Length: 145
Image (tube, rainbow, N blue to C red; front, top):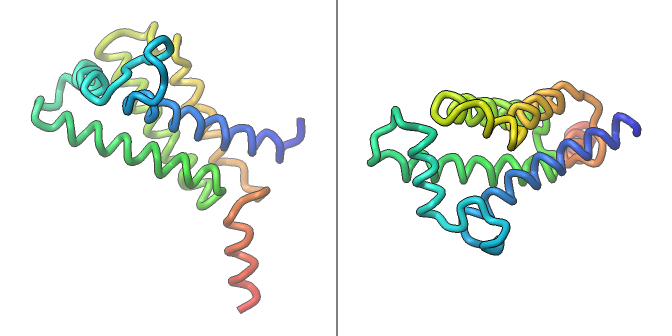
């Protein structure tokens, strides 16, 4: 597999993971395969892995994380500022992994490959060659001006 294919695979895999999780918390996945299945269950889990936040802030935390996951996924799919959004994705996933580890233990983090996904995002952020990315079009239009 070429570096270009690996980069596309990383972009799409990370994006799919984010969008799948968001779809789950809005009940888009069937009950048989859902982790949360609805927003309230997601917020309950958010409280479990973030016990240091007051209950009143949990909806805000859940909303910000959900918004970030959607934005990061779209930017990675499009190849817009890929290095930046890959790095931000890596940090978000690492924070998620550490929150899970300190609140519920390490097994869930390994079962859901959260450290591996975080490492994949950081690896993607180091891949400098552009391939099928909107950034390429933006840089071409800037050089023509």
